[in-house]
Amino acid sequence: MRAEIEAVRPRREVALAGPALRSRSRRRRSRPDWFELLVLGAFAAASMWVVALDLHRASVHGLVWTGTDGFYIVDQMQYLAWIREAAKHVLASNLFVLHPTAADYFQPAVAISGGLTALGVPAWLSLLLWKPVAVLAAFYGVRAYARDSLDGIWARRVALVLGLFFGSITILYGSAGVLGDLFPTFLTWGYTFGLLAIALMLFALVVYSRLRDCGERARWMRWTPGLLGTFAALLHPWQGELLIVILIAAELTLWWMRRRRPPLALPAITVIVTGLPLLYYEILGRADPSWKLARVASKHSTFSLPVIALAVLPLLLAAPLAYRERPRSFLALVTRVWPAAALVIYALSASSVSATPLHAFEGITMPLSILAIQGLRRLPFRRLPAWPALAAAAVLAVTVPAMVTELAAARAGVAPAAGNANFITHGEHAALGYLNDDRQPGGVLSRFYLGTVVPAETGRHTFVGDCLWSEPDCPARAQITQMVFDQELPPSAARWFVERIGARFVLADCSSRGDMAAVLAPITASVHRFGCAAVYTLR
Image (tube, rainbow, N blue to C red; front, top):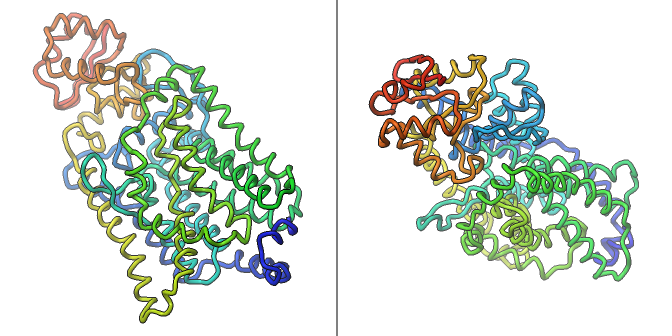
């Protein structure tokens, strides 16, 4: 690999490569300094914002917090449902439909949380324990990437801040807002698996690049990038796909620059080992009807490329300047091909092959921040008076407004409201506890918002609760269920519907209208009331 680096480095720099690599190795092992610890503290504090809001609101309003940690409760409840399943038999099935589904989904973090839940830890806590892991992993992943990409302590510090806190306003659903997937702090609010996958991908790219630059001296280390990629792909397959495309593109680019075949062992091992979980997901999406329907339901065509580009516009304006300089290391080459690789995964995910194309751009602020810093360094900013103050102001401008916006949005988004199962009444919580303890098998019919909670709280199937997994015809399921509990159907039609779907229990929430007992009486075996909520066991 030393000969390959010679092709892209000046002769003087190549002559100093050995001492430089040893010096860099010593710096990599150094502990975080005071500035980095402040950044880590700020990132950790921001990650706890939603949890603090939830605990405060639950105590003030006298409600029960369901343990969710994010804007979109259905996603967190989906994770909790998987954990409840993993606590039984490691593999998870789809609990958001009443009919039995195959237990064929394996995810390592879910399996570990399932093991903790089997030992008695509440599912919501076993999920929440991943937050500090993801926060620390993201911090050290961004730090390692910045330290291997940039020279100069303040350049690395700026890259660390931008990598963890960069955010810009874009247009979401016709109004101004921050695109959460591109804002790392947002990912700490309930999307720790995605954040952890980004961190693992960063580590994989750093280790891979170090091996390429050092000539792959340690043969056993060849497996490290692939193993990191495997766990990233299992946690969040988009990051596994992205890792593969980045490395293939970088290796091909280097081959084109040198016109010489590169060593194949490291890239082959990394691509194959990372690709195995992706093959598993592909089989899952084709063989499991629930996953096949969820793939179709998760197409987020709303987030177009112009919306995404606007969300990273400040970085996009400066990043192209860095392409005028030839890459001086393999990681520099990786950084340059990453944006194009993300576009490839975005297009792939928007097709019928995959889903949720926005996830392809998670982590994109890291390479764009590095490129922006390198590009701006080529401009004569240092000649300006008070240029450090101007640089600090620029960093604050692309971090603080987005953070303030997102903190305010979280404050409004997680407030107790009708149909928001972040919080439920004590009666509804007691009814769910009854369903959890009852040994009779069977699924549950409830209003949509409680159906979101039923699998996580009881381990039972529900008729509707998550429109990725309550398929097909999730909107129609939700509408007719709403009509049953609002008693907008004739009693005979409501009873016919309840009998036809095959539910064993009907869970009436505290907002149900009229007397559900009278409607269900002809088909009810028993009724258990919990304040304003009730559980009807059907014959």
